[in-house]
Length: 497
Image 1 (tube, rainbow, N blue to C red):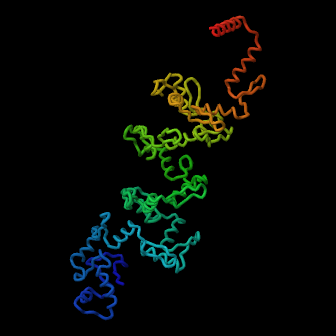
Image 2 (image 1 turned 180 degrees about the horizontal axis):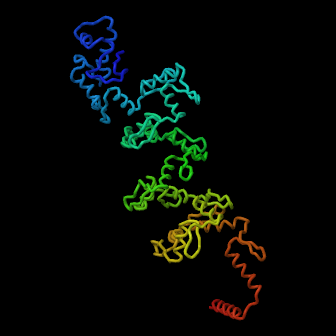
């Protein structure tokens, strides 16, 4: 095998690379003149193989074996950031054929190197050598935690986990990293470089792991599945994030308010709420947001897009959370339960607002003195003072104060009754009507009379019953008798007519 001095000394050659197996350039040139020193024959044969085309892109100091087309000019072009070897598929150039071959192998997904011990396949020869090393030799081990590695360099990087050493520094944003590869991947965020391209749809990615996960979607594969609910994922990090839903783990804590989060990205977006930073702004109205996803959701207000459609009633929604909340109307699910009174709610925000009532907190108050736990309820209440009815029916031009009132009214035109009683399958236009109807099937009578203890299903029925006691306690006055007599006469006349 032929070695070159600069590889070991890290010095840049001034006139070209000198072969260590031959004493000088003159001796090396004598090989082309027919002189063959016998002690060096095997070494020079390896050098001849190198020049014959096995490794292109590195020029040597010899002008006979490296002519002008690929001699010292090729070496100079490598130092001058030129790339003599180009990929036919992507057009990207590389300084050596080895790098070109490696890039081609990554793009095609070929794994030509097979380990004879474990039958695993690799796309790089170096990875195969690491696998063979793992089978044949003792693995380096960490003294702190006992974890073993296939390479000493991996152990060196791992030790920095315990020492918290981060020697690699980003010159753009000042972030520190434990590994050089982490720094290189991070720098692609600043340069917006996405070198890994999907051959099926052309999408490009910053990380190779992201490309692998993306390609699994084309094949419908989700190899990483949750042991709790069976949900599948294309990337192991996504599975780790999902498992925190079941475990309740929130490892990312805000240093300002001690609030904890399941995802690091959500923590970063939350930290912007403590500052005035709003990096994502709407081009229509200029409103700023802490996250790109929030801007995307907001922009649907301007575009009118409603991509989430209910399969039961064909209603569509701007947000996925709105669809999930709406679907609970059809299923009757109320997963958010109040810890104080066991009352359950369909929406988590409603449950939080209900908790404020137990604590006596009403942060949103009207000028008339009435307080509310939610801003939206205060807005609805203010319309009772202003008389505003912003929700208009497109069929009959009738207006309503609440959106729920409009939706209920529209059922009169369409005949739609989307809310069904699970006991008798009776249908209703409004969810509140279903809840009141379901009391018929239960033995409870939540509204009881304070005088006689009689129970009623509906509050209106209790109010009618209370009038019986109030009329019995007082003698009928003469004006009341005249009024009742006139009503009786009117009823008789109506019957005869």
